[in-house]
Image 1 (cartoon, rainbow, N blue to C red):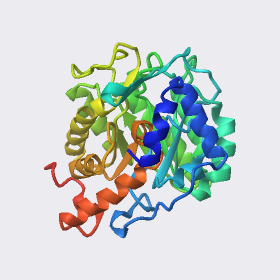
Image 2 (image 1 turned 180 degrees about the vertical axis):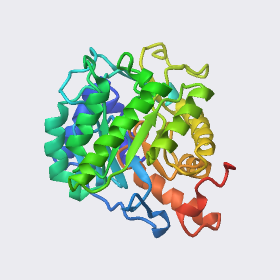
Image 3 (image 1 turned 45 degrees about the vertical axis):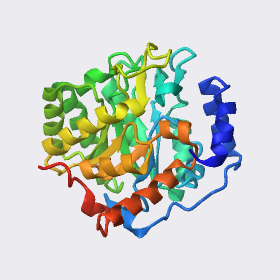
Length: 355
């Protein structure tokens, strides 16, 4: 934990979790956190989708739901930022309280339910900030939508011309029925319609953009095999592995462990890592993977890179280790790479996962 944050954390943890989150957004909006560079050691730089990433540590979706503080987040040391999840229409999400800190487990349970202010506000904010950072637009579907696939197409049509990449989030456990979109037939329909819409956009002059699919860690081996086959067949550029889990590991000791919702943080690390390895093998290393889930140290990030991830995301680690945790991880990751004789982060991708 960074020294100043070790003093501030007890005070923040006295606040209800969502109030503390909103306070942090206001602090970033008002420039209360000093900016640092996200350019660290050149060994961390890489290029994917024609985009140069200064370092591989990104902020996962869920923190900046409305793309309000993209430049400020980039100024905390993050190499890229993913905003959202963004639904076509604004929606309030599930009733509060809906975020729970499992401090004894270094974990979070949330059942937010895609609370956000909708496409129009996200479009305005990404338009204003997109040139100041690498920005992914994480898309969701409205809870009461009669056609959830159309929600993703609408979101992509609006935000793809502005964002660096698009993420299709069909793995949140907090919108009833959403995870059913990961089934083979409906997933093929979803990806097919998104690819058709992307082709139409590029024919109209929009620059080709990557589509990433964010998946759950709770799927069966057969489900994962089907997803791998679908993304390869549809030429989807990447997978984000993984979203939160609905399982509750036996190791949990915090009294709030029985709350409903998705579990993130340290207990998700081994679960997400296992799925990442499986999907790296299933896709034969042909699909870029973003590793997320329980990453809080440089060693965690390095483990995920060696397992097959090209990029990393985190969120819960900021809650427990402070706003500059990405910078600390990036510096440590560069050191680990050099200690093992690598000259580039790309050389380390997948070395521990045979294809």
